[in-house]
Length: 283
Image (cartoon, rainbow, N blue to C red; front, side, top):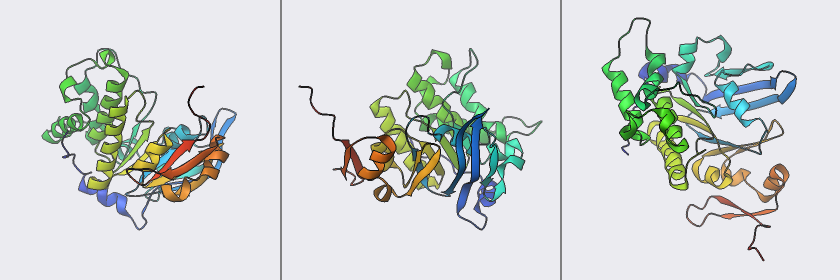
């Protein structure tokens, strides 16, 4: 794959700078589904230019928080601020030019090709009467190349494997060319090689293009190796935030996940590596 993904447009980049380095802020959020409260009074700052991994046990509120940050889940209380402004009051296309989301539960209309789906990422950049432009075409092709799905361009999405579909959805998000990308379990359905490739792409987007990346991940070791910052959630609250080497301790993993572990340096990267104590050879 090439490394030629474009940066967000100058206007969106300028709009996102502001006086603060905080790109997204959750301020006293209460998140609920009907009467079931998922998170209460949650506060979190997500800095511009960081690659943040959100980790935690199942059903602790990670995906709901991500949807709230993308304005797809309305908080019962509190606000989400995007570059200092209340995201609830922003026009839909304005939000979509600045924040892209890869969700878990995306569905594809029957018969839609890979290229057609990826090209839908250009919707936020289209005016009411605007025509498909050279910039739209270039962004679509570039996104497919980056995610390794260019050769699938004319295949129906519903005929692909789960891993291929996951990469196609990511390509659509990349075609939006947003300065901030939210990824909900982006390695789901991917084999190990494609998981590593996905995380490497996240690193490249962050390091080479200064994209702000926020990803929900299940694998603590992948999160520690990939991210510049970890957010650990537990029972709907943010339990810890910081650099992986500062946050990922045996005590914290024991408290949050209920596991006895040791944390040792990764032999390749030197980042924290979590090793369970009670998963040994079968007698």
